Length: 358
Image 1 (tube, rainbow, N blue to C red):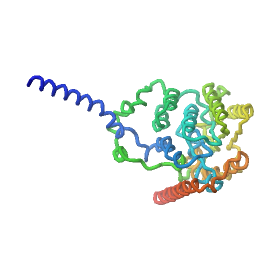
Image 2 (image 1 turned 90 degrees about the vertical axis):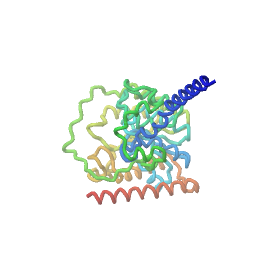
Image 3 (image 1 turned 120 degrees about the vertical axis):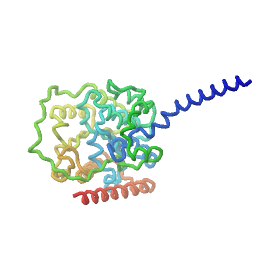
Image 4 (image 1 turned 180 degrees about the vertical axis):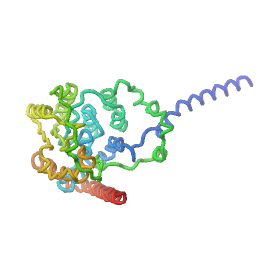
């Protein structure tokens, strides 16, 4: 009897040890994964959408790269035109990211219009794991996320590390900060305003010192990228959504938008009956002053430039694309009143911080 008890206890201890070992990754993962609250805030953008989608419907969804989430301000679109909108953008969000971001959005709502920034069409293959992680780690699990991961992974990446992030981030022990511990098991603060990532600094564009763009070896945009644009076009048509193509009004040697590419998008839009707005040609009409309206020497707009572009494009959305004014909807007004207040408070706080540092 005594021997049986010892064997039983040993077996029980072994089982408990295995259970603890199996549970350890799940317990440690919330601590080890990056939090994206004060560093690389872009990594929080994808996950912030889901709570917003439960609050109110959005008639316009913007999708694309940094030229989306730093160029358009949903709070301004609401204040000026009563347009309910959200930005689903990420750092170097490539066209397949954007396609699956659209599919993911349609799991929650069907907007009247989707606005896609075309700059990412310059890429025909995955670029960096870090950008994949920032775009995809925050996406809620579904078959859409699984397909997005498969389309986005670089050769060095493994699907298993997306399914179980512990196996990707287990070596972050030496990098952990107080932020990692603070938000391991509690809700993170929002870093964006309906997907808009605010910048209040000012660094003028310096055209005199910009290098000449490299010669374009192939005038055609990559076949893979255009294939995903085809899929996006077809999906929007199937769902009765108007797809609008744009090019943000920023142009820089690192992300140069060539005339040959632009001509290809003009032809594509005409062939498929889509609107295409190249705002690079409309800076004067928008009222942009690139000595004041950019925070990084002309690569991206700051909040002052983004507000101007939002007012300009908002009129186009209202007058040409007939996006409705929702300010007569009491429920929508309640949500957007709160969002607008948060936006202006964030702006005032960031401006005050800039003044202290200057």
